[in-house]
Length: 494
Image (tube, rainbow, N blue to C red):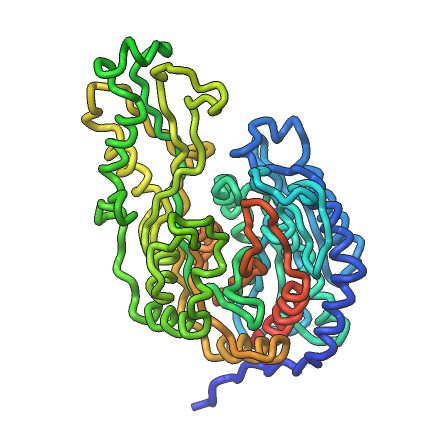
């Protein structure tokens, strides 16, 4: 019997040279491009219904595509793909320089997005969402860290490999512009590009976070999300509260009553068991390890307001492991916006005709978001108090509602070795494992389509980087190290 054919062992990169290349790329090419990018209010379709007429998403996509093409990476081809009524996608391909031993050549997918969250309030006086500023090795402004840098870092990592003459597998880039709206356009493009994606064996996603800036952090899970508007209508117009209160129930009280079906307001626990899942044992072990590294910084890093006794307000728990589980593997409800309420200075003695809350329901990684959206609608709307008109409309586009979370597959030995080596080489510390509370819809979609693929899900959203909120920043030293680490892991792909 013949011995099994061995996979070729990739040449070892010069890690110091990878780091030097990444540093130069960021200083000379990436940072100036990101400064221009931050200045463009390219908000995601959910936050800008006129995005198509405004053309800002097209502009940031076009700018990124032109930058990539200007690098003239050997073997790289690029096109911007757009279907009618849908946000554009950048698709680039870099030919393999390493022959496959057998079967279909493997493909590495590099993912990022270029659409942004809205402005939000509370920015520091000298900062703003669309006024980029570099200060203390941080680039402030909306979208640089979430996730405009990704396409530039990914291409620069490829260039770093080629600068050393290192071989690599086939690489494709998938850069979307609808992620902050739940990636509702992405399934259509994935179906259209299925054959061109090929045999995906590694996904590099740079849209995640880091628990500190001292080591490489691998994201092991992502929560899902359902967002939408809960509205309670009780009157056709506002009326004097002295005349009607006590007779007409407050729309806010009804809304509060309806939310009590969903959440225990004293603890924050979501009541329907269908929104929970069993937490895998290996994830609990990883949470305990991360908690040992981070300690009380898990909760102390938050921008707490002054509490009732003059000290800081407190979290739901001060136990680091429980805090990590709460933000990664347990469902939570947040109210992120309101309608029907006048500003305080204009709040007269009027019983308002309606109250509306924008809800954000974060779901554990193993709970199907579309099914949860349907259950949530039924829970909130059925048997309305006082026969009020209660409606819940989940956000989505073209029939897609909710974004299902993701639980990473087990690491192959080569992947675990490569990630640890990259962390040691570029951060001087071992790899960290952590779940994230946010959502990247692509991950569950790719995991479903390519169940054997390894997943390198990382990012620059570390402590106080504040994606989606005021004073969002990109930590430049971490981004440089992450770019070099990506190159090293891709070089190790068998």
